[in-house]
Amino acid sequence: MDSKQFKEAATSAIDEIVSYYDTIQDRRVVSNVEPGYLKKLLPSAPPEEGEPWADIQKDIESKIMPGLTHWQSPNFMAFFPASSSFPGMLGELYSAAFTAPSFNWICSPAVTELETIVLDWLAKLLNLPDCYLSTSHGGGVIQGSASEAIVVAMVAARDKYLRETTSHLSGTELEDAIAHKRSRMVALGSDASHSSTQKAAQIAGIRYRSIPVTKETNFALTGAALAKALEQFKAEGLEPFYLTTTLGTTSTCAVDDFESIASTLAKYAPPDVPGEIWVHVDAAYAGAALVCSEYHHLTAAFKDFHSFDMNMHKWLLTNFDASCLYVKKRKDLIDALSIMPSYLRNEFSESGLVTDYRDWQIPLGRRFRSLKIWFVLRTYGVKGLQAHIRKTIKLGETFAGLLETRTDLFEIVTGPSFALTVFTIVPKVAGRAVQDKITKDVYETINKRGEIYITSSVVDGVYVIRVVSANPLAEEKYIRKAFKIVVEITEELRDGALPRDKSSNSVIIDVKGVGLENVAALNGSGMVN
Ligand code: PLP
Image (cartoon, rainbow, N blue to C red):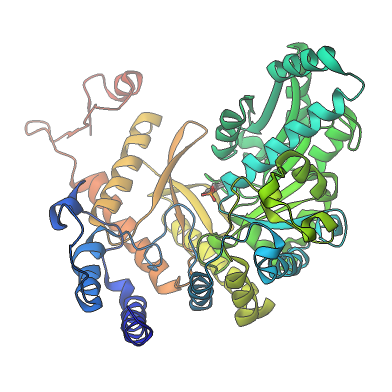
């Protein structure tokens, strides 16, 4: 493809992308292809001769589109959103054009320097304490995902803990102490932490323990729960060295009680004393809300913590991937992740005047991801980003308000919190198992029909439905449509669809998946009136 052909192809591709976005709401939001569908549509080997772009592009609609779940559709209300915006896409386009695995500053100084600048801009926008800025001892770095950020933070925490608690030893004594400590060290999260903390511990070869959280604290981790867990670990001879706290948990968007956690740690493992516990704030989704001043109070305790991560690619209009990790002391990352083989040596790195982001991450090479963040921040401005967050939070309130108009059908479990509402279906007959079953049936039927796409979870042992409408195209009319669909399907399944016993006209409950004790509680026969 020469530059003339590229221009024609790119123009045609952009036309198609624009029309995809303009009509995306009319597509079935969740793909319903069968596993292996694509293998049947594509040849078993690449073509011998190159093909014209027009032929390749045709296959996007006919072969790829059926297998896409449209995350940018306003009818996508599942998981957390994955933002996309036109400025974000332009950033990706330029990044592809300049392709360079810019691991060292000299590999492309603009890649490193723009990243430092835009991450400082963002830190100020999110109201992070000054210690997270590159102008102090900290700084930000773009990672691929919140999970990757947790692995990086945990590895830095592990090495720092081992280094600081064994600094008085040497030789085989040091080796033995490190081996012993590694076998006793434990990384912590809460029951509501994302599974990525457990996975990071698995990758780092470290024990993992999760601290229980309950409905009484709205599923937030508190200093009191942490203190109790720390006492218990101490009694077991374990050495906690790392804790994930969360701003916006995956199931319910709970916010951990950062202030009380900081107070507890000041007592049990004081900051800046060898053996302190590294606290990471996982704000993967809800961290975006910190662009609004009404959430700024949440960051006050972060000065006592060690790292913070939020995904601009979830709720902040930036295309995947743009996970922004901040550390209070960049030295901690570099100590854990730096390696300097001879072929990477250069005068700039050795001068100590430049940042080599390869020392802040797992891979060596890295993409020019700060461009899209720069484009997004400049195109929307602070006010535009705040407007997006506030609009979608309001949509969450609208949805929860609609649920409250039908308390005969729905019970809100948590929220609306950061645009996420979590609810269950009120069953015709009281009973946990019956409630779980009808909620699951409603959830599965909604997704099977494919007009909207939502997710489920289990909270406090209860099967729940999560609805979050926060992608860039979200609008009130789609929220109202979603509510209508949820009502229709709930009414249909709660009443109409349940088979009735011919002689008694009793509704026959399908006892599959219903706990026996609940069935017995109904009427002992699996039937109710
Ligand atoms: N942390 C939280 C709170 C999340 O909700 C998620 C995913 O939704 C993650 C971490 C993992 O995100 P990623 O896909 O960026 O690794």
